[in-house]
Amino acid sequence: MQLEALVLALLSAASDRQAVVAVDRCDDGSPAAQVRQLREELSRRLGAAVQSEDETAEALGGVQRGSRAEIERLIASARFDIFHQQAYDRAERTLKTALEDVWRLPPTESRWRDIRDVRMMLARVYTRLGKKPEADALIEGILRVEPDFKPDPILYAPSSGRT
Image (cartoon, rainbow, N blue to C red; front, side, top):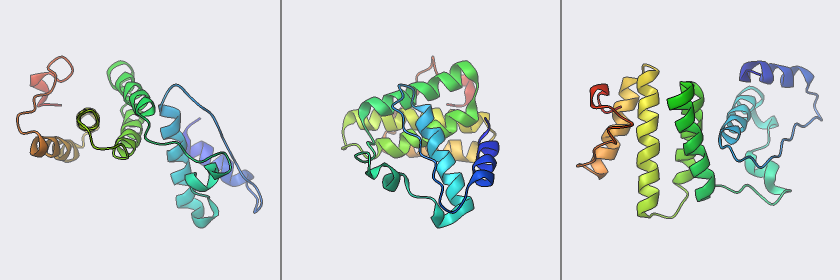
């Protein structure tokens, strides 16, 4: 179901004392990104009537975020969406979630590689979506940290302008 249709269905069915709770442990990272987007849209429309993700998950032991395994699932899901499905809007949401989560990890070389990979994939998505300034800003951020960085030519053909 499209997000807009789901939001409208929830809003039309909701009363003052109604709650929607979804709990799952998925191997695919994209459902987490979709749930966050749904929560953001409901919050935008309902304001304070929507509990935060942390408040909702508190009774279940809290939200587990930023695990290496979850971030790797998000990255793999986005990579599949980009290179096999051409689902750039979905990949954008997933990559934004991955980038948010990867910043929560302790600073290490592997965290930097994840940040760099996510930013490169997001730059590719932005290029495909016609958001070239956003793509350029992501790449420039990588080059400020790692001036000699060269993207993988298999994933990012030189003819594509780095993305």
